[in-house]
Length: 209
Ligand SMILES: Cc1cc2nc3c(=O)[nH]c(=O)nc-3n(C[C@H](O)[C@H](O)[C@H](O)COP(=O)(O)O)c2cc1C
Image 1 (cartoon, rainbow, N blue to C red):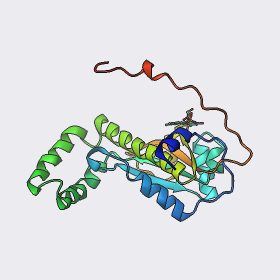
Image 2 (image 1 turned 60 degrees about the horizontal axis):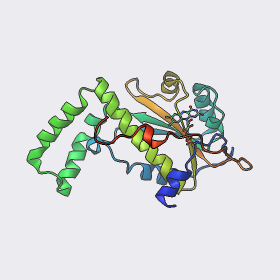
Image 3 (image 1 turned 30 degrees about the vertical axis):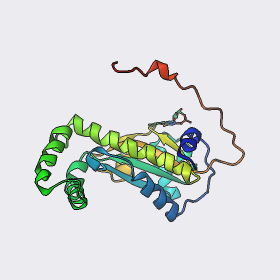
Image 4 (image 1 turned 180 degrees about the horizontal axis):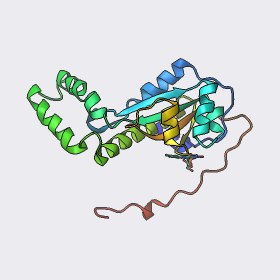
């Protein structure tokens, strides 16, 4: 599917075909494609929990204010933003840049200092912004990739974060920007037309605010 078509046709699907399984291969392809998302200093501060087992979906549904799509979708992905992604991924990222010729070994300390300055300490607000914005880019990439793979999605922030953390053993310092339901549109369902979008003239200006 053409990328413009995927963007234009992506919708948040409320009704998934229940009982439709999604294979390991398809989930892998979806996640590997999404993983090509850009990120700050290529630090990729995201983690994902794939929830496919009916019993686990039931638990997640309870944390998500009983939204039926959590149970009906083939899989629900818990998207996790990791403020510690800087420390976790920085050295091997620099190794890769060095090996591929993006940077010389003597630039390593300078880049390290730049990431410290830009993204602050692991518990800072800055670091939370860093983690969430990058995880959100991953999430958007995943929703577009899903269209290309013949799948539908639905992002959700209607859930109790503490409940999800507790039930899925997610450490307290992580942030969950959204859940994404993935699957196929329930047969016989016709979507309502896409709701209004603001005219771009309302929010775009040129050269200054
Ligand atoms: C971060 C995020 C969280 C959302 N949370 C929910 C949710 O919890 N429940 C829900 O029904 N829709 C949720 N939505 C879906 C939006 O309502 C939907 O994207 C919007 O109405 C535009 O529709 P479209 O995606 O079909 O273009 C969410 C969307 C985003 C991006």
